[in-house]
Image (cartoon, rainbow, N blue to C red; front, side, top):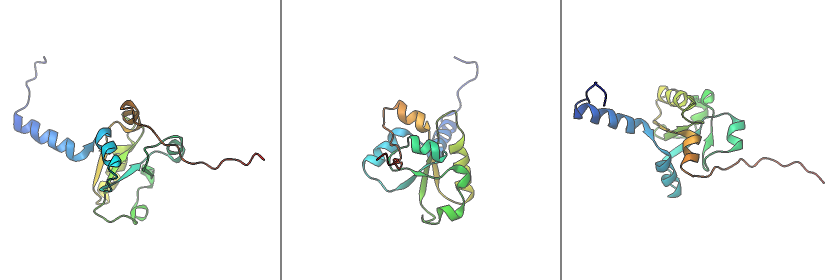
Length: 135
């Protein structure tokens, strides 16, 4: 064990509660989607091409750079947004969460992103792309 002592229980409690207020995980998102929960909007904040290759079923694609009030106008101000990106190696979800928070919108980050989703064994859905007419 490290020579740095553990923090007091009340400090650990505040820290853990703060993390849970800011983040959710792939299992909780999956369970909510299975129950057809409409308590949140799941935002895939990656680029369109990545979204089309594979995304969480039910997610809306809104790249983090396009998160502006005009693109959120269809959702009531109290709507909770859950954001995800490619995974732990990507900061797109953090950028999206920051933009949403600055717009006064409730937000949580789905930790792990696509990488975490796949690690848990959950499937991705590919976008229905138009197929060329080969006749």
